[in-house]
Length: 253
Image (cartoon, rainbow, N blue to C red; front, side, top):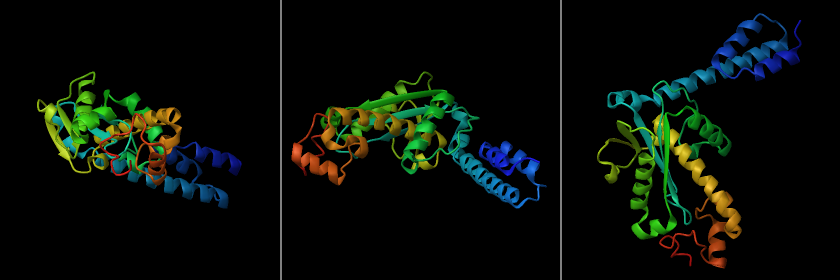
C-alpha cells in the first residue's frame, strides 16, 4: 500500500485541473483518515481552479465582444503618481485561445506572482510592446501627455499591428488610427489590459530597483518613487536627485 507521505507528495505535484481530478479518482476509495483528508484538500483545490477558470473566462469578455476587429491589444500604464522616475506603458496582444490564469490588476498581485506572470505573458503573447517617458519629459509636457506618449511608443513597438485597442480608462489622441475601447478599471476586467498592467509594472519596478543602487538615500527599491513618508523625509534632507520630477515635488523642497 502506498505510504501517505507519498500520496501527500503526489497532491503537492498536482498543479492543474486534470492532475487534481486524476488524484481524486485514484485515491477516492482509500479509507485511511490521512488519505481522506488529502482527497478533501484536492477537492478544495479543484474548486478554486474552477473558480479561477470562470474568472479568467469572464476577463475575456471584451476580447470576445470585439473579436471582429482582429488582433486586440491591451494597454496600461504604471507610474503616473510617483515623485520620481519614468512613466511606463505596455501593449500586449494575447492569442484568442490564451489560457493564462491569475491575470489581474498588477496592484492586486504580489511581487512574486507578478514576476511569474511576466515570464508567462512574455512567452505566450503574440507581441509585447513597451514605452516610457522620462521624468524630464513629464516635467516638460505634464504627466497625462507623457502617459499618452509612453502608450503610443508601446503600441508602435509591437511586432504586429493590432486591429483594435483595449485601454484602461483613457483615450489616446496620438492613436486615432485605431479603434479604441476604453474600459473603466480595465486592468481588473480585461485579460489583455491586465497582462499589459503586469508587464508595465514589473518593467518599471526593475528600473526603479536599478535607480536605488545609484541613489540609495531615497529607498527607490521599496517605494518605487512614490511619496512614502521615508521618501519624503529623504527628499527634504538630501534634496532632489536627477530622476525626481520637479513638477511633482514643489510641496516638499
